[in-house]
Image (cartoon, rainbow over all chains, first blue to last red; front, side, top):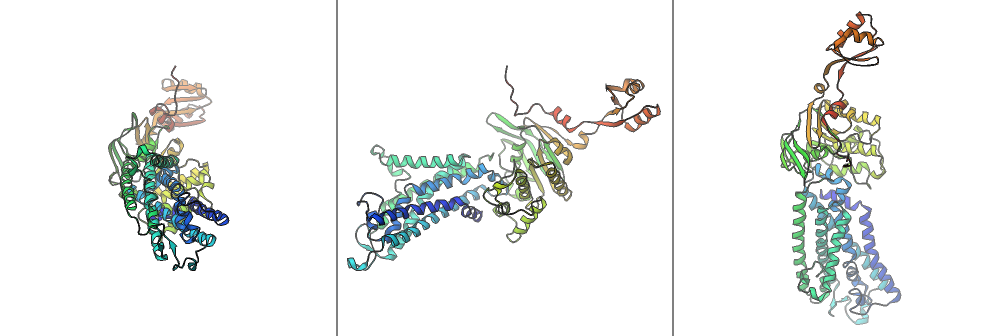
Length: 276
Length: 303
């Protein structure tokens, strides 16, 4: 069933349109920055933007900082919202279950396919943005700073390319877990309703609410528990030494959300009448 | 094959299926009739473990449903409320996906099994067009092909000829009869009386959630003990048969009599001409209309 879900994911034009759009944004930004050579002041605009002007190899990190807050979660919410509700609306859910595909297996397969989508999207974004960064922004000539090549971390000391690769991989892993949190919300809603759009919208509503509350001082009591609170904690991977606290909190929080929501989705789906 | 005991399903205050005792035997061609909204589809969904019963018991192929439905379903081919598939993929790919999704059937034989199923329903020459370009009849055939993929012991078909033209209906009916002759039990629900009358050997009629009739078709349609006669000399025939004529409409007579051949000999012996003569049988339509009340999709204004 997992194989089938992957085939369905990869053969769907929508998947590739989403990935292409996700890749297009950082490339577009890189093109603008390269032409005008005008980066936002440090502390403003997307993270890393001032750093990448000197060295394009850090551009994948900047690219991820661009897609993580809005673009990627929307794509994940739409796909996850469609996971069960879309099959229900299309009528294929009843045929899959009558095939028979166990309901638990179906949910697991959907979750695996969503994970693969996130990884695929991030790999594509990292790949294209690295190429775009190096081509459009160039790599810093090592001689200029008298350092043995490499990228400057946000804290100052330089990173070797091995370190950089490992930290990008760490970032991808962290973002994947965060996006699975989004997927879990949408998947749960997807088992509640037969409207894929409704499920995706519900998940996005949760994320927007969370983002708004994060900017509100009066909501400081709940802020540590909001799903989007630690979304950008992976930026700490690019400090030297790595600042682990927020990363750990973020992973723990997402694990709680995942456990809770997937449990709820499973319990609801197992006992639900499939009348579509 | 299928047994239900006091099967009931309530959605809130609406009782969709009400204490149904269904009995489908091995080798049956069972036709489930009933007006729209009488609970046929809910019943079918419960048999397949899609909808969970409020109370009552279900046994399919000798195993309890939904508890052991995963052992039952691999031997069941189903078509529930119209066919469905992924619109951007071809029919063949759709069948392969459904085949690969469930247990049983090796990957090596998949291509052959899919081709065979398509052949059986008359889609052997299908091209790579996506499903969204299919006509309703083609989709219906594809849905049937999906049900036949694993050479099931039991076919559960909800409105299998929906969207087919008369020739297509005939083809599917012949196909089902052929499968049945080879040992497949066919359980089909329909509101098309002719469909069930031509294919079924046992009939169930549902009305407002209850199974109001469950009987052999032959028993239901046994002669009523009356003979229909059409004769140019109807007036003389009526005089001759006197008290046994129940109704006369022009040259048509309804006569209380068990033996059309004997009655024919009697009339002809008296020199009366007989244009038509046959034993009266109730039509399935009369049976269903007598057993059911109103369509659930008819909503009268309250004065």
